Structure formats: structure tokens, C-alpha cells
Image (cartoon, rainbow over all chains, first blue to last red; front, side, top):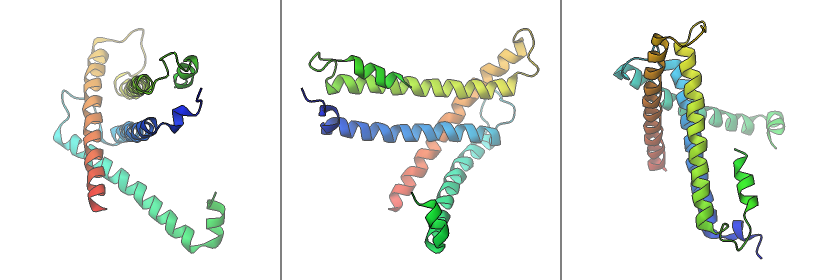
Amino acid sequence: MDTQGVTADPQLQQFIEVESQKQRFQQLVHQMTDVCWEKCMDKPGPKLDSRTETCFINCVERFIDTSQFILNRLEQTQRGRGSLSETMSD
Amino acid sequence: MDGFGSDFSSGAAGSGKMDPGTIMEQVKVQIAVANAQELLQRMTDKCFKKCVGKPGGSLDNSEQKCIAMCMDRYMDAWNTVSRAYNSRLQRERARI
């Protein structure tokens, strides 16, 4: 009886990786739809007009830009200031 | 989401329930269910906020119509976001 079989199986390993990545994508779509709804949606109408649709698209782009900006700046701050990188590192 | 653990612990090795194919199918189904639940939860939250004012004794006709439209618009928004995010990811990968 191989109790380690589940995680040692390369087929399952790949499956887990693929599904995990898909889930990370799904989660972000949920999150961005939520946040962008607040920013872009007025009163729900009979269809999504082009102005609102553009807002959602811009919102997604700017959200990702923000995420990258934060990561980059955090990285810079860690490199520059010794004391801050001490408190930030695990 | 605690369904993940309980389902796998009930299977016995060699019973056929633990073969990788079955596990993968079960996991896919549970993931799909979890995503649908998340979508419904957020949709309910947003549409309640947009469509229901001071809560009365029941949902009146205008509130129901608003909620129905809101559901469709939320799905439109979700799809738009999904497409936009996918495009962005592909653009990022093309840069590497």
C-alpha cells in the first residue's frame, strides 16, 4: 500500500499544478469583477454599453499595473534600505 | 471548501475510488462548484446593493426586474474581465 502514491504520481502532480494555476486565474477574475463593478457600474441596464465595457477593460489593466508597481517598488525598497528589508523578510 | 478533505479520506486504496482519473474528475467537479458558489455569492451581494433600497415586506416588481438585469450585467462584466485578463496575461508572456 503506497500512501505517498498520490503526491508522487507525476500525472497527479501536473494535474494539481494546472488546476492550481486555473484557480489562481479564476480567483483574480472574481476579485477584479468585484472591484471593477464598484468603479464602473452605475444602474444595471438592458445591456453592457461600450463605455462601461471599456471601463472594465481599463480597470483590469490598471489593477494589474498596480499589482506590478507595488511588487517592483517593494523590491526596490528592500534592496535600498537595510532595516526595512529585515522587517519585511521572512 | 472543506469538501476536499472529507471526500478523499473516505476512499480506500485498492477500492477503485482512489485511482488518479477518478480523483481528478472529482476535483474538477468540486472546483467548478466552488467557482459557481463564489460567483453567485458576489452577484447576490452586488445586485442586492444596486437593486434593493429600504427592504420592504417583499421584493416588488421593479426590484425583481432590476435584479434580473443585474444578474445578466454581472455575467457580462465577469466575461469582459476574464477576456481582458487573459489578453493581458498573453501579452505579458509574449514579452518574456
